[in-house]
Structures are given as C-alpha cells and as structure tokens.
Length: 132
Image (cartoon, rainbow, N blue to C red; front, side):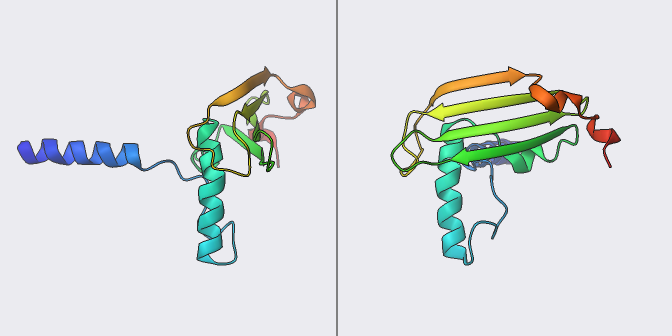
C-alpha cells in the first residue's frame, strides 16, 4: 500500500513538471540543437499565453484548430487561434502577452484576450464530417 502511494505521488509530480509538448520532434530545425532551441522558445511563449497544445487538440476529432504565433522582437507576442467545431461553428481566439517576442515568455500573463464566437464566413462551411 505504501509503495502504491509513493508511486502515485511520483507520477503526479512528473505529470505536473512535464509540460505539454507543442511541436513534433524535428519539426522546427534541420538539426537537434536548432529544433530544441526553437521548440523551447516558441513553447515558452505559448505557455505564457496559456495556449493549449495543438498536438493534444488534434486528438479530439470534433475540433479542427489553427494557430498563428507572432513573436516580434521588441513588441508583445501575439497568438491567434481558430477553432472550427464539428457542427461548422467557429471560434477565433486572440491573445497578446505583456512580454516581448525576442525574449523568454516564461512568467508572462496574457495582456489582452479576445474570443469571437461564430466567426465570419467559416460558419457557412459544411461540418467537418461532411467535408471531403
């Protein structure tokens, strides 16, 4: 029983310390060093903006998500995410951080966060299940 409790506590600790993976391995660089650098940099800003991992969202077949991350060197980072739901409705989420894109995003909180339901022309698209 004691071993089970220790194991459960260890698993819970590791789950808290292991943040969500935002990018597939080797997707951001030509070598491991470049890929790791970019992944850490971009991920720190996405975490600071409280953005979800698109790798995790992709597992949910009822939502299709797209994100634009704009890291300006001396201005606030911007994340724009479009979610298209299975019924054809859509949500546009815009977040602006209080930091600067050329620096680490850790510890920064979103400065501006806007959500627009049923966004524009995308509502006239057929539901995801009906698309070929």
